[in-house]
Length: 302
Image (tube, rainbow, N blue to C red; front, side, top):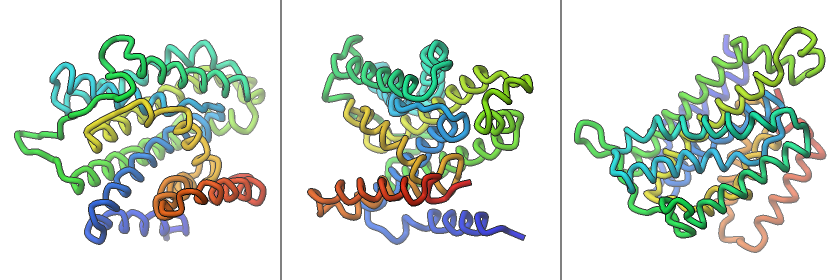
């Protein structure tokens, strides 16, 4: 018999599957971006919610995936399909290189370090240091997905590709939770010192979480770049990192339904109230504060 969470998850899955048939192109684009941002938020949750690492530079990995696809496609002429693997591997490599020296840091120190990496990343993009990123304007003219000569260019195709990516991400999350990694993360989150005394390599599993989370974020970044046919530094700045961090905290750390709810609150609701431009951020700022006071473990905690 299905539990309450499984029933809600199934209902959301069915709604998402038929969503494109009931909305116009503008809201279809919002739906696609919601799915992509959900994938990024889940990858943030692997690092923050499961490993307990205070990481606020996640938009950097998202951007690395997006720019990898954009550069390989526009600057070097590779088809989009050929850019997908590098878009995952490049963020994983940088996660290994950057997180390795700082993974022992805790709390605010790690938070500041990851924000610093995100700022440096944006500066590299905007200054076009390697002559590949297009500077502040970014890269335009990213190709569509082609398979056996068939173009998947419509927004509906984009939506279902993002939907499949979200499904793969959820499968990975479930597999990780039920694996040795998931058990280790559970003990590390509960009591890091006790986990070490049990022989669990805290440093190894935290770094592993960083690398896996970065790879998934990179895949989402590749999808994001194809959806909009362009990338620019503004889409991957510290503000975006704060949003992904907040999504996990507001929705509920290590909670699959919670992350989806958090993404809806932080991304979709501002789109609904876009006409109230001057007041909407005040309202949602207050909503976040109230959530942290009234529901400190998130709206849908584990």
